[in-house]
Length: 345
Ligand code: KG4
Ligand code: ZN
Image (cartoon, rainbow, N blue to C red):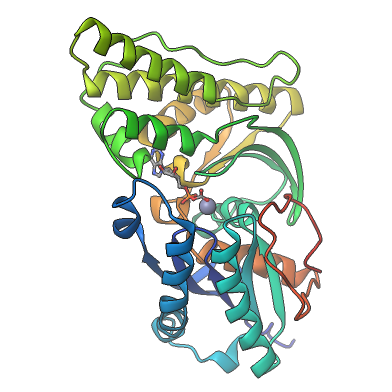
């Protein structure tokens, strides 16, 4: 019998502040994962400045792609497809990756596959969990998104809950700024919370009456800001670690509660988390405990695959490629792309 041919995907990601490229073999084997982060640059401004992000992507993109091919020990002509994030994200940032991918595809004739950024985050779980296959429930919590998703099949998603206002990561970043921790806030809150008392301040656990799976974090963020203002007015000292830990506990509790409810109601016994906030240590610990109690198998990616990277785009791109999906050279960046959209094909 003829041996199955290996499938190589060159993946490109530039939706926010990381310029990234990777080579992925047969869907789940990461041969290289190169990330050029702009965090230090944006820290000066307390957050991502879209114009600066685009300019940096343009500077770095070719180097990063070359490094990914080299580290993988591969050559461009070996690639079966070029997978690229085409949304959602910052339009100017996305366009850099999309243009690079289109140029490579045009010059070489290698097929182009547009990938949804969130589909990439979800697919990050396949890299280290070879046994994980759909269907399962996934919580995607990143700087721009909080989605509770039923992964019905590769490339087939049902969004059952999402944020009405701030994303989970955005709330982390805003609260971090308010307590003087700076950007990016998530990892810093995670760290200082270890020295704080999570029960020191009773912040609200926002609930929505009309869809129990939806999230809302702006009320919680306001409660933190009000608490800080109150302390300042009364001349009371603010304990940064206690505020961080109490805020983090409130976010984690809401995320755990919504996820466990969804798993029960939809009847799934496998659960994954994804996105930058999925690397939060308190969230991982609380989810692991809740899953143990409820007999649910719990999956999460290593931190490097939680935050933005191109390996996850390569994995998602592989499954789209296997389904026969190809994008034309008219592929455009779509800043508000909906998960499950077939716009690219
Ligand atoms: O997935 P990601 O890299 O970018 C988006 O697609 O948005 O997520 C970045 C977000 C930021 O808001 C960052 O503060 C948050 O993930 N984050 C964390 C942690 N590490 C990153 N939030 C909480 N705890 C962490 N350890
Ligand atoms: Zn992301």
